[in-house]
Length: 85
Image 1: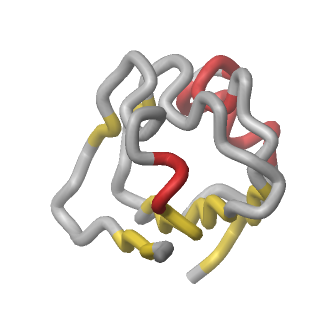
Image 2: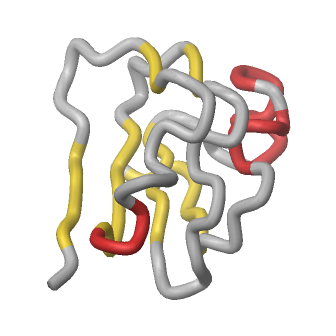
């Protein structure tokens, strides 16, 4: 069984380290809303290519990395979609 998480406002950060690593096998996707100002290092560690991260409010990988640092997506093979609404 898989699940999808859509973070509701007013979430402003995703904690670290490896915030979703321990539950990653049961999640199909997650949506990070545009108001999130901080995503911790390795937050999506061990996510697989069959899982999806939708990043709202960030038009590209470069924009997300400028806001959160590149390590938020380190050790993740998830499909990441930028600019989702």
